[in-house]
Image (cartoon, rainbow, N blue to C red):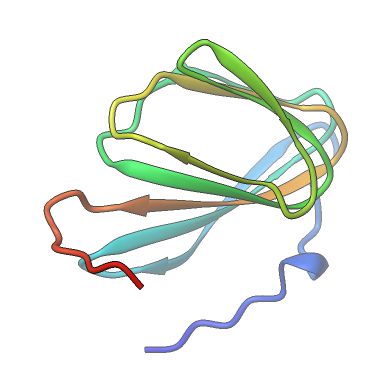
Length: 108
């Protein structure tokens, strides 16, 4: 199955947060998030390794107690169970990819 999404056209809700699953299979789950400026996700943990890619806007992403300011094109990887939180510094679109840790991978 092929999935193509133009994240540049995704609306950012006024004073809110949007999440939409773009793809899900036995190996990964990919979720688009849109945050208006000032929106936050409080600290939590994911049961799998994950990556975050910012496609538009800026956010402060805290993982393992260290805060990273991320803008368009920024990529972050975090291990399963890593405590993390975020705050949108301006209207922001990001893509979260959750990777099952029990699936064998190969280096490319």
